[in-house]
Length: 275
Ligand SMILES: [Zn+2]
Image 1: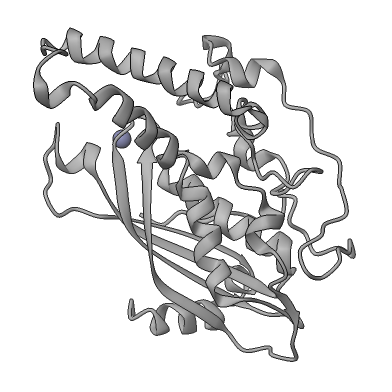
Image 2: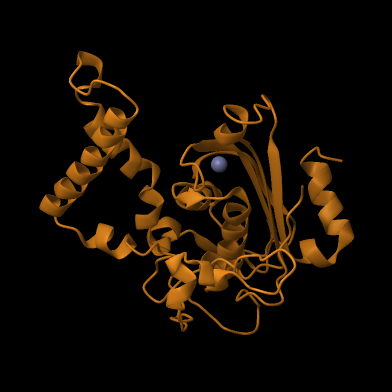
């Protein structure tokens, strides 16, 4: 179950565009997102394709970093970032109200002791689980891009990730392994984990999470190649329906020399202990 991403049509090509070191990026145009692609109506389907597949996600069609430093922001990301403390409280109260409805509809007594503060607690938890929408990539990277004459593979293994499946709103969690081969520029090691955390704390599918981490790192460092592998357990799989306890899902995204050169890819997989 390996998912790979072509670099050819994405916006991560290494063609000469420069950005300053230390995480400031020259603005580049953001592709307009067609309304119809966001609306979720039946017209989004490509009629005529054999499987009636949906259009590609705007989350990876657009460049990794937009002009003001947000990275694939959700529709309401700007509203969350710019909210006043009063607006934040009102948002929390609206989420809590919705949770109360859910509790009532499943047949619970919302006034019993154990559930009294659950809606508010859940609202705060949900905002935490999705805090990655508010992350600005410049703050995430800060001053951690360094000029360094190092051209060997850098790997950080076993980065813990906790995310929410966007189809069921239940957790999936596991380990991410991130590798790159520098092109005179390296990123502070802890920032790789921060990058993974930023995209994981959003509603995700594992394939997109994998791709977003790889594309963002590629954009930040313009390295010779990037590889990301994620192994995760999905609560929607193991706790309901098919109930395949212990099953895990592996996704990968290889860019640049990891994609083009079998030797590099094999070295990476060997170092991961997967070969
Ligand atoms: Zn799911």
